[in-house]
Image (cartoon, rainbow, N blue to C red; front, side):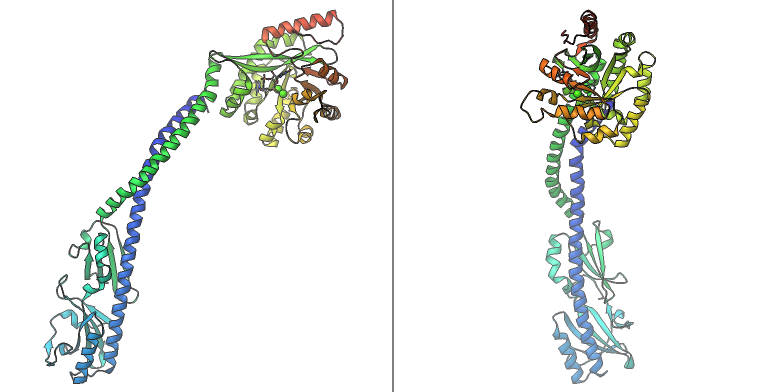
Length: 532
Ligand code: C2E
Ligand code: CA
Ligand code: CA
């Protein structure tokens, strides 16, 4: 990703971080409130339905009992039985015997006078079990429904009057407070009782969400309707809590992203700007033949000359360039510089080579080989370039992919060095598996030479191992004549270090080469460090 796209993406993320959490939390709190309401409606409706089922169940068994025992006439026994049934439960107000459309006997009228049935609903013959007939007028005090049981043998009907308003008793008060309206309906939609928030407004005209529970035993259902005002009110309360949480989250996210953005801008993106601004420079650290003291080439190392901060060493910016992926472009630029700086010198000295460091990202770069070929072209022989890779990089990449890339590089005639050897992991595995030509012994082992450190002897082992694998050895970070003579005695092939020279700008490196040549010509092959 380029710096500009990364910057845009990060800015978009920062903006999102500010907006998303409060919006998300407000939406979540809305769903939460609606869910609370639905749960409440479900609780009310099932309480009412359970109660209705229980009361109608009582009525049914009472009526069935009368139907089994009573005569179709208003005898004393019949009247007493009706009277008992009506008082058996607080829900039943009256019990009747209807024969051929006439109220023949009634629990409230001891005079036993007959009266025609006024409400035609009360003459409906139940298919099975009971029929619940509607009162004549709805929503009036003391309005009663009648539950009817039919005895086909003599066309007798037994009825129990009950006030359906009582069905809602236990929840009426709470439902009203929660702004819930409840209705008990027959399955044909006729309302037996409605209570709670409104006992008059038609259900169809109520705007809130609703649920319907059907009875499994009787042809009735309970509908509970919520109030939009309640939802809105509670949502506001929830939103306040959730919204504050959202704001807090967004503040934290915002700070985090701001930190990340700053970090990225100052590292990844500014490396790009610095390259465009010409702040990068390539330095060359001479590599010396240990036996003769002759220069054999150099390792190219990047330097960043920052206008305010001065020289920034690669340890600081390479990681950022790798993280942003910009390292691929930076290395391509480095290769171009090597061609510009060193093409002539390399042509003049066919035994010289310039090495450069690869990064893990190069193994994911399908253009690497094409770039190498197009940059060096015919101006620099591929045999005079060395690519350095560390064990660490190979570990970070899929083995086979890295192997393929390295094999392709090798196929061009370009040697490969394993860098910082010994600083990493299962070193042997990588040594035998990958096609290396050089092994660069990590500076830590050179530092240990002549000390009491436990690593002091390891340099011998590493050199032996490299010899067995027929790898040329390079000792890095050689600073003292004692280290040099030890390495010479071990027959390490090349050395690189401040004893000979630090990394130099191109023209100074060319001067170093000239001085080294003059020295070699004048002094024969006498091995002596040439300090420039
Ligand atoms: P490296 O590849 O191991 O490079 C050797 C480092 O050791 C260089 O540090 C060099 O200046 C330093 N050095 C050489 N001789 C001596 C010595 O006698 N004493 C001491 N104390 N140090 C010595 P530098 O240039 O700071 O580079 C550090 C690391 O940055 C390099 O380690 C390399 O991993 C990375 N790097 C530098 N340039 C590039 C580049 O172009 N591409 C990539 N991918 N990495 C680079
Ligand atoms: Ca290196
Ligand atoms: Ca190294």
